[in-house]
Length: 416
Image (cartoon, rainbow, N blue to C red; front, side):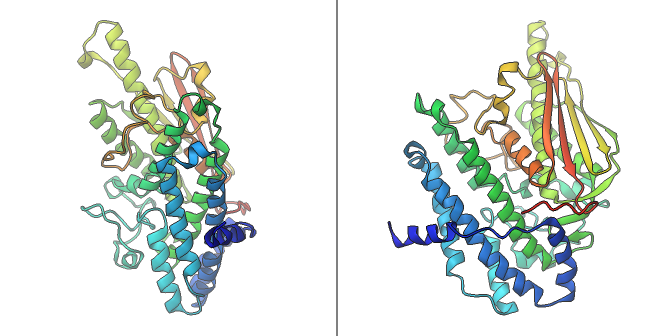
């Protein structure tokens, strides 16, 4: 075993030091009162991130040989290793100047150079703003009650799970799953749950540290205290409409009902990702099902009609529920369990999955194909104590329920 591998194993054997949401909320006030808080928090992040990366590196090393030799999986491993090496090589953080350098480094490391704060919008060239540029960004009201839909057009690009590295991992898993004989024997779901849950936690920890240094009204680090449900839904439906029309030339209407004017505390990136994925699947199902129905009835494409996708919001005592209902033909009974499996897709398995990674659409994600959307959405919901469930009537349609705890209303001890 090489020295590097011994170092990884040493870090992987260390315990995790979890952070609760109560602590995260308290950090906002502490960061304002105590100038040295950011140095202490940087030390925590500096100590914690290599341990979490090392545990995932060991998971990758323990994969079956047929998976490890996949070039996409190897690329993921190399990326994690590079991040691990950079973090462990960084000297002890003692001053605010040290913290500034550390913050600059984790800005580059977290999630493939994508924006880390919601202020950090993509420029026309697609390059991300640095954390230092956050201070010069427009006044931060993104996804707060005052944000207009036009301000959030690019929100989908900021979600942590529409980035190159995740696409590489998804493609590698799909390729392994499609291997004759061997693929059907692989069960990579537990491995991917650990990989992606850890990835979410690393991003939350790192981004929270960065955003605490550039606080905006209505935010405590990455947590928005007045997240507007109406703005979230309108932004997600606009994104889905754009993608569906580019992909199919059609898109169903979206109707909102219930407590759509409610606000709550949450991490914007997480719920925006979940909403977009669920609405995207619903709109695609409606278009495909009713185009097929029109063809079977001898009608032209222009004569096809598309029933609306309805979004119903209910604000309960402890949680908010978003129900997305479509008339897209439902899910066959034999496929209902498979939709939660990573790599499963309703697209042609012989085409989409094995093609080289091409350019993404303007929102940073293809319409469908790699099979990570639903399980990863559920993982995001479960991460803060919520969940995603669905009920489907084959031949008619599907209801999907997104349950999210309203952070800050109650002092839950969800750990990160």
